[in-house]
Image (cartoon, rainbow, N blue to C red):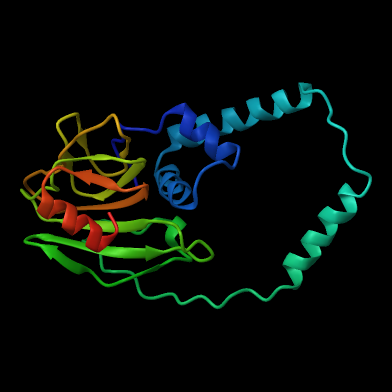
Length: 220
C-alpha cells in the first residue's frame, strides 16, 4: 500500500528504539509507523549499524565471574514460566481501505465508546504491560479535540483520514510527536472521519475544566 507519508519520527526516537529505551506504548505506536514507512525502516537500519560499530569500538567492561551463569539462569526461568493467558477481543471495525497495524496483533481493544458528538475512543491493552497508555481515537469530519499541551510525550499514528493541528496537516501513515512544548488542537478535515492510534507518556493538559474532566475519565 503506497502512502504519501510526510511526517516521520526524529532520529532521537529511532535511536531510543534501537537501544531499547522506549516505553511499551511509545514503542508500539512507533512500530506501527515503521510498518508503513520504508524511509524510516532504512533510517533505523543505518542507526542499528552505527550502534554496532560504536559498540565494537567501546572499551570492554569487566564482568563478575558468575555473570554468565546468572544470565543463563534468568533465561531458563523465563522459558520455564508459563505464559499468561491473553484475552484478545475483536478489534473495532475500520473503514474500507484502512487496516490495523501488525504491531497490535497481540493486543486487545475495547469496542468504540462514545465520548462526545462525533467522537469515539477504544482502549488498547498491551499484554504484559498494564502501565501502557495506548488508545484509538475515531473523530468525525469537522470535529476536533480540545486545545491542549502535554505532561509527557504524545505519539500519534494516523491510520485513516486527516487532521490539522495548527502546525501541519497529518494524513494516513504520518506520525506526530508532541511534548510539553507543543500546544495544539487537532481538527479533522472535511471528507472523512479520522482514526488514530496514540500513546501517552504522562497526561494531556487541557485548557478548559470540562475537557480536563473528559481527559480524566478516559485516561488522557
